[in-house]
Image: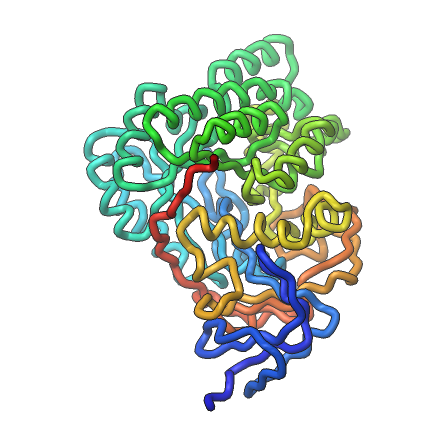
Length: 463
């Protein structure tokens, strides 16, 4: 009988569907079996620990150009931070420049990531125009392993018109892809911003007023209507409002193939952060902005009842000093984005599971399994069944921390969760059976991560 390469013993295995006390065996970088009294060349004692599949963050922006600056985490630092937080796969974005072919943009992005990535990664393709040359490349993009396409309802240079959305939906639907939408009504945001600036409101506290909740909900309603017409599966990114989540729920109740994502910032932070003195509110500028406590509560409930399927981070960090302060005199110039790729798993455990808002299995589903399923990475990622990649996290549910910027590995000078008490934190992360992080020490190396080709996802009608 072949002896396993590695056995993790005495832990409590938590997957999206079950919880069991058993040993987990790894052979040739894959999960070999789950059982009792297993033996291996290397043994890890997980007594008192949860054994989880490596988390999948479906929404990050590493080394992303943003106007005159670039997000501060590159592929090496961002994926290192992810590994410390128990994330073994991230899905980032390709944003082709004007006139650039989709496949050339893919090759450039992959060449940037491959020598740096510490964990595995996949890519979404952004569609900022539907010129025939780009649409003709969609089958090649699918073939290359990108089966999800992001589109925007706002931002100059990125937004599509309604007519363009309908055509894009039609063509993506034909090839079996999934469309991700950043949904904010551009006219409402532009109107509100002009009004604020005309009134001399230039500080960060004007930011949430410039992108009101109704801008999100209207755009979600509209793109859901267009996706329904073309029978296109759609995924709404970073839902921040009760209004937006309710719109998604209504579409799902009609049987529409529609999914949603939210982020820890929309579950745990509120728009009160923008009123902090000394320009501190700029640290929290992101789009959509932070909302009300009532929105936090509604979104937790939407995660619990499966209206929202995933928790990403929209990790897009900028230094407070040297980047965020580009908007010192006008909030519209503050680079939009906040860090969060590292503490996601622990935050959702502490404030979701420990409070009774989510079960252990829902925690794993929303942070690990469902992102892998929706984006064509399951069962290779997001689970601990035999044949899956041996991406494994050991999580200590009793480990207590006060979250601080100093304890994190994100390449940025603050965390929006400064001072948050945590109970439960990852203590070991494995990628394909290889040690990435153990007891606060990094064992990973740049280039260890692989580019993942996504399969076409399989969707069922919800009702």
